[in-house]
Length: 219
Image (cartoon, rainbow, N blue to C red):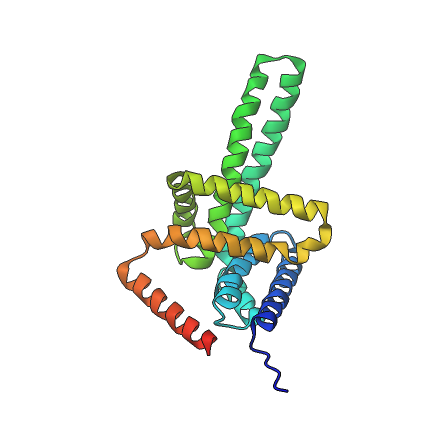
């Protein structure tokens, strides 16, 4: 009896193993905390190139992106983290004022909206770093622009992130799978957005590479 490893079941198992491996790399490389941005950008790159595109091995893809984007992703993460911490402090302070009946406490809702906005900003920021080479200032600004320009998609990304975080909180072993699956969903959404701002030459080159990958994977 001829037994083929190139069928939908084994391809699915292979994708599953790749996702778990990518998540393990992401977790290990995120442990120092200040490397979280670089690890997240590397995870997105790996999901796009290796798991979805089948172009490179997972480990090679991850560490290539981690190394190449380390400086910018780390600086972006530290800036992002500072913004989150400041807003979180202000949010908690205003909540205490609101509970005490102080009218200034109404600013609690302003900071709540700001926190949601910053979460959405992060949904664009690290995938953008994984996809494009740009200055740090331009990267931070472009991530904000994309979030505001495509607000309905931004809200969907925030919801997906929230659902993923809740799932991991509810069943913690999902941390070894959910981050990669979330990147897959993000990639499907963000690529539609990113390609609107790519030059015709770059877009044609990417489409050609993807067509060659699909042909190779179908063999």
